Length: 337
Image 1 (cartoon, rainbow, N blue to C red):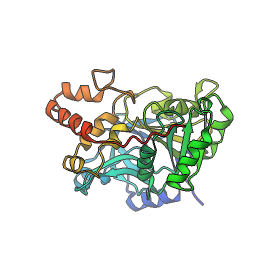
Image 2: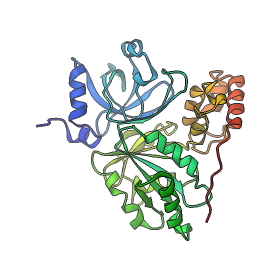
Image 3: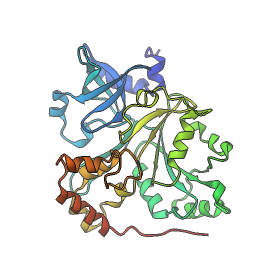
Image 4: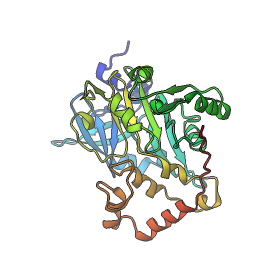
């Protein structure tokens, strides 16, 4: 019989992770889940009330041979607490049940993490002019072979007269994939998502800015106007500039909210222009901006602006990234009724 705590179970801990922890377990090591990530550090949920700021140990850094070896949001890790400080050293990344990321063309060691150990990938797009089959296809490609089940959420149902036409368009393009029609003004439609957010389960929202992802996230993490999440970066209101974080939902499951993904998806690996340059470092910075619709023009909490001022990102590299981005021709297959 499993002996781990109900709290760890609520974060998704199970026999799979226990077995992985047992393989690396040594005196002084404890398990925790990464619920947030900043520049060069992580946030580890240790107990219901304790979040530790974590850094990669020298041992793990030296043992890591590829980007996949480093932790990301959703990972379970083995750590040791620092004496007298609310900090931790991460010594091991436990085996993953699922993983969402993008491998860079021409370099096996270049991977852009999105999330790990998620049960469900929910692709979010809207029933209006933002509907784009090409973009949906790219999101679905991220979910392929990830180990997570993939579903599509079509938002802003209240603004669409003929949603069934959009559904049919998706069916024609991608076959029999589960689709949900939702609206924040129709709570019964949102309640159909409950099965993705029950105790011990983690789902990730993936979608572009402006499609209603933030509204959905707010609904999932609030009850009667109050935030229900007890995870540290949520309930304490800290670390709001992290690029992705795990929040507790109204149904006691977990959701990983991600920033808008236009830039991440635009630098693809299927063109000569994109494969000749690797901008994964710049892409990672765009994910760390405070707001998902950041214009990277001195907006509040802009990671790009901060990096330029600190000279950790050169103006030449930023200009090269913008130039490469402008040359990527994303097909405009917008379907309108």
